[in-house]
Image (cartoon, rainbow, N blue to C red; front, side):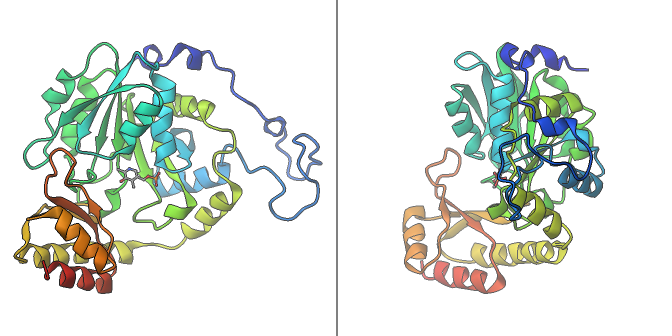
Length: 341
Ligand SMILES: *Cc1c(COP(=O)(O)O)cnc(C)c1O
């Protein structure tokens, strides 16, 4: 078992979190004169549940993981930031991250004054466990992995991720934002038992709720407790808690299946175009596409009303655009425009 206590910042280990008087009252119909709210009921005058009990119970049921092992954040971005705030001493500690990968790890690290040691993925964006572990030193608190990875689109095997988790004494953050589109199964089942693994998922992609801002972290009870202690008390507003509860009732399997079918179709069509050099295999809802001239392709698409992500200045992605899979009609328009290059 990993010794998590050694990793936690001293000020966080000693923190006495903000508590609400309502935590002491479990009855249904109280007279709430504790929080200086407006007493006039309009649907929104009361503070939301800071523990998100109902929503966590639902997410627990869906994922088969106990509510104590679930943290809910204002997007996964909040959970990423909290990893730094809980474990990383500003100006002293560091984290290791794969590169290229999601930009928020670096932004959150910079805000928290934490060095990021980037370890370049291999030729076809493969993972090198030894290189990642070699980049760590006594002040490395976390390794950030993303699978399927953004922007490369490939997934790492569970065996590779678990090998790193077991060989590393710090925290391993595995970002599974695109797991619904992937053939490798999720590692959330391991999050409560590995001891040092935090699995991140989000409702922003396959679940279609980007505007509601709900990210999830799955880990041990202790790590979830630390993150919950440091978060803003009312980090998930009532509109989000209630709307998510409702929307979780509607399955998105058909949409995910269509995106995956379209991904294969668009990849095939793009690969046949003269200006396209390579379409990388994808386990996500986007394609990384290498073209002759990324800036020219990007401008041509913009002129035609299609916005994609130009990743050509990202190390390892020269000449590449990252293109999200849209509706079948949107994808036809994309292929048409790309054909004019
Ligand atoms: C889109 C994305 C997220 C989602 O972030 P939210 O804050 O939950 O919207 C997380 N990680 C990666 C790699 C992403 O691409």
